Image 1 (cartoon, rainbow, N blue to C red):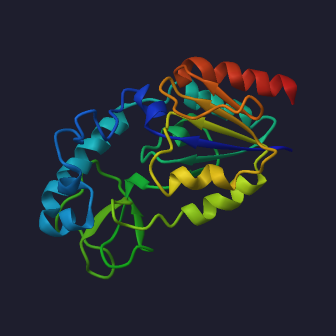
Image 2 (cartoon, rainbow, N blue to C red):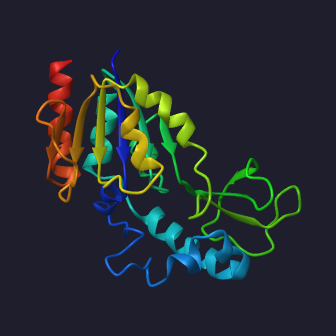
Length: 229
């Protein structure tokens, strides 16, 4: 069975109505990055950070997987599929993808402020001050903030080595370390990039650029790959 690695970013979730974190004005839903998405922001105003992610969580739980998310599930009929996403939502899982790796954390999880290995599922929509882990430290969102390491990147690299196909969806791959993952793909891997605003360069050989929305282009590509397998 051939291996497919799917690299997804904000574009695929935007088609489900989830706002992209970073708008064209450089703000995240009217907040500066430094206000809500850095360790310093957490130290300075944890209540603001929790409110911000509580609102994100409400928005995400109301959203539904779209045609692109569902199309990826069909690939599992004939391929070994690993989804590596920069998104913090759970739309891939709700669509039915069985192997999903979140590089930047998960909105429905919290973790200890002093031990990143202590991770908990969030049953309620809201996280609140005073909610502690078993070590008696305040729980924070299980999100990788700017200035923090991306530990899951090391687990994603071996998947890239083994990939026969890589499909990049809804991400410019301009932010590191995720942007460097393509460097670990085999020279023999066939790469597809689905993004209406793609800046990737096609070499006319093993890189195919599809400048369309994922909900339109991905179901077509999936059926093509299934037919050729």
